[in-house]
Image (tube, rainbow, N blue to C red; front, side, top):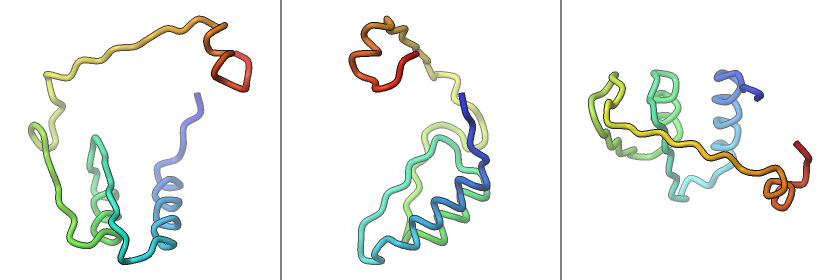
Length: 83
């Protein structure tokens, strides 16, 4: 799995946002809100609204995670690259 540098991601999001018309409605969703992302939101969005579920700065203990395993043949049906 390839991971993106968070600084590069923020730079790319800023670049994309600079091309968006100012009168367009824009939404940003994130599971976490580090300071750099919060600054990005304040810079790029007009009158942003923050909806917080749970306690700020703490992991939610009620989260359930699930994963699925797909057969190789099924993946080949929907993906252009082989595993």
